[in-house]
Length: 109
Image 1 (tube, one colour):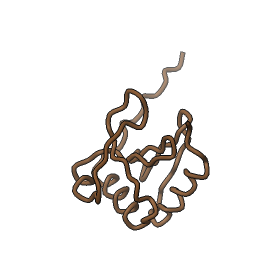
Image 2 (cartoon, rainbow, N blue to C red; image 1 turned 90 degrees about the vertical axis):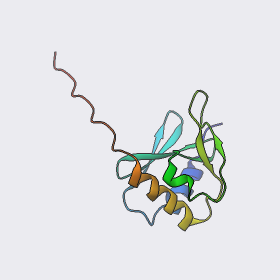
Image 3 (cartoon, rainbow, N blue to C red; image 1 turned 45 degrees about the horizontal axis):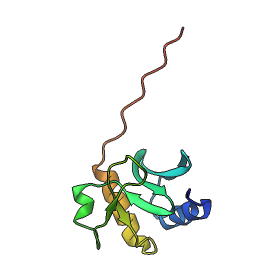
Image 4 (tube, rainbow, N blue to C red; image 1 turned 60 degrees about the vertical axis):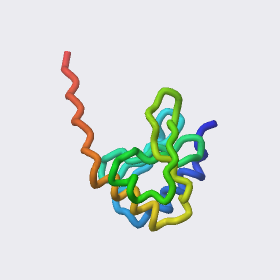
């Protein structure tokens, strides 16, 4: 079951207090990016937050599961209606996760 566009829009609305949040459709699901860093995945209408120690200490409840077959466990966040809490978790992850490595330019042949 793929994530509904309405669920992705709900999450976008919940995170609108954060500047530079982008939710991109990726492989039938969605990636959540803040300041160019992928901080979470939306899969099967569930919010999966990348696991970091800094986020773990802020979680009200710790649940882990892989967002798709073969993936590492992510934190499953069920309190998505709590806008301030969700923004805090996403901001915390963005502060500690590294920027993605730059892509190598394609060679001209």
